[in-house]
Length: 125
Length: 360
Image (cartoon, rainbow over all chains, first blue to last red; front, top):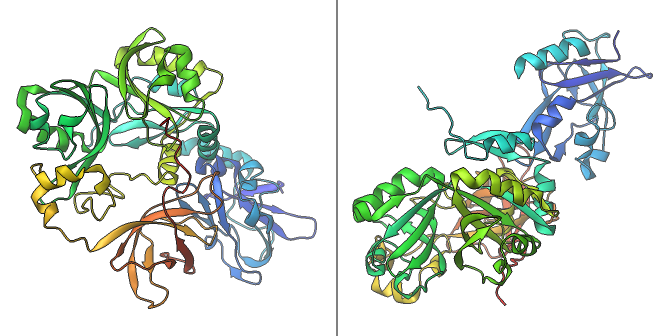
């Protein structure tokens, strides 16, 4: 299974060594949004369904939803984003992760490989 | 079928500079270059170059008394080369547009109005002044703003650094004939430079090549003007807001209010404002947005609404302008967003960042 998978809403999901799935927004998404100035993270313990709003990311101009790419439970959030929301711009697919899910099903379905996501983005542009 | 977007004379230059574009007032405008926050910070630290050619310029050949029949500005006491920020009102005293007027001669004025208001403003001017009113779509407009603007421009146009705030002069800038005014929409010292559209790219390239100058887009223009406490037509002021409500009565000299011979003048004399434009700073890092309700925290009752909200690298917390019903809450406010928790805020005098106008 590829290291990283993408949703149609431009989130990425990466299963880590401990089995938790880290989630963030893609490099493409952060570039489209511009400077990120605020992030609203979900509560730990919350159950999310794939496609359900899980977090909010705000750029200078507007707020955008971040959707859970898979079913599961929020087990960790990236508190660093509270003081440094620009981390999402600097390292969207690494240190700029938003939250981690304990997946309901592994591997999670309905997500794209990096190649498929690149093609998807190219079509959108 | 919708109209295709217009382009300013600097469109291909902006593409070269890596701009991101978005539609604004019927134009395909550069919204950002290096990034909105970076552009904003650069403007307050050095010098940013804005393409504002979408704004509509026009010449008016009329005696100042005739100008005063329409506009509240004290046109007859403006010296040659003086510029004023003024308002075009409707018959009810509401604001049709905010604009700049420059006196260029005894009976000669240059007007700069908002792009989105061009058609309705120009219809008013044309109806009143007929052939004496000449739109100038052949002109472009650039704004060079920031503490390094004067030094930068002076290298390309000797004497520019000596101009006082809100004055304008014809001069050659890098071999291009320009009407240069020391004014802007950022709160910084700076200039607005009008030249022939066909020479705009050459001029813009020279300015952009200067060591301290970076291009900036409309998003940074918006965060800068809001941080400077300046209104955006269509958001903070419109046909339903009077200068009294908008706290813009300072643009109408006392003598002119008494004369009241401009459009909307009589209505304004009889007008008792029911609300007031205020500034506020949030106690949360969450950006305040237009449309958020303002609640009086003591009574829990609705007190008003946010008209513009923003953030800036030069302000620690999000800030906003909005209107509150009179009597206005004195200090503490509660902001009610469409989703999420209510946010405490404090009234704050504007500007949120001090003005740096050149007034020696």
